[in-house]
Image (cartoon, rainbow, N blue to C red; front, side):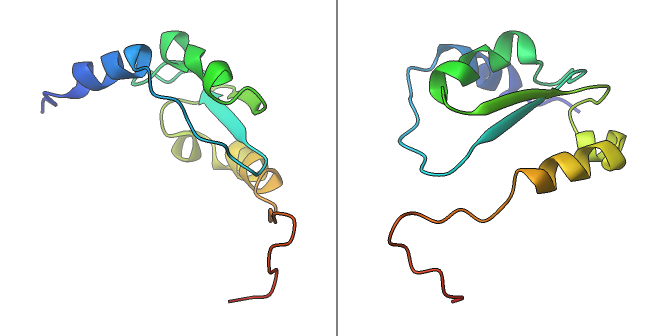
Length: 95
């Protein structure tokens, strides 16, 4: 199987001038140590520029789909960074 847009997509990650708007909650960006599809180098190099206040981490020993490779390693990392986030003055009642 061949994906004709894959190289174009990777090129756009490196060369786009797009910026993210403000994000008003904690952000963790986790790269996968052995991601052969979208490796941290060079594609993850822009993350600190795009989200300078994020917590950056590398998940050791996993590839592009880390939950498949090592669910026992990934699940606690995910749940520890997914606490509720509320903005000042936001209604916290359940909807």
